Length: 308
Image (cartoon, rainbow, N blue to C red; front, top):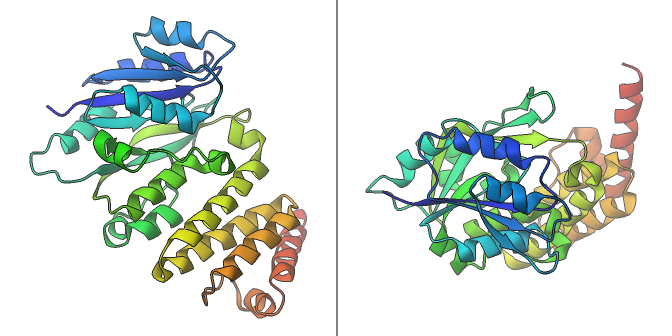
């Protein structure tokens, strides 16, 4: 039977780990390993993890979740790895659905892409249930990793994960390290399988790192697409431009116009003919004054919102 390790990076996570471990204990097929990386927590993270039977790997210096995940991969002995943030949960059929795939004798995939639901962590109300494009994953995995609502929701072969160096520990992309890893797998020719049934819950908490500091998340994303744009062949650059155009929209929502300008500058430097997916008036202005197009888009959006 294929072996599977659950790898949980944690920092001051004693408040959320019990709920996560409750979801682990409900699995019909137990994990072969459950490992927690404690990133120098000042609370009872280690005690809570050990109380639930997890193997704890402790860091000596706080280095962030990318480093922690890579450490967990080094310590794990299982054939397959699943990385789960400490404030997320598994759905009851997670292990059953995953083992159906990784246990197949004919399986030649390196990574299993999982569907998920996005939930309010306080009320358990479903906020979103993204429908991932399986056909796109099989036809153009790079475009899938760039364009889909795809986060930390994959099971990966340990040896393949280690062969590409794991998660990017560059602090400039820290807030978008999951996307960086996913794109890296596509650029390294990974083979994929897909589970269409939701297997996990991504919980939204207002106090989470990305919720409290959205501009840092957007900044990290722009830095990521700049790095990727400098690495990829010409055929992939329009997809990178699309991602930068999207980050420019998000930056405008937070009045980060210098960040909008930087995203558009990076897109221009990629020297493609890519244009944003937008209305004809927007595109008309964009061709002569890109920053102005985004400014007026945001202005009109706020005027319409006030009028509702």
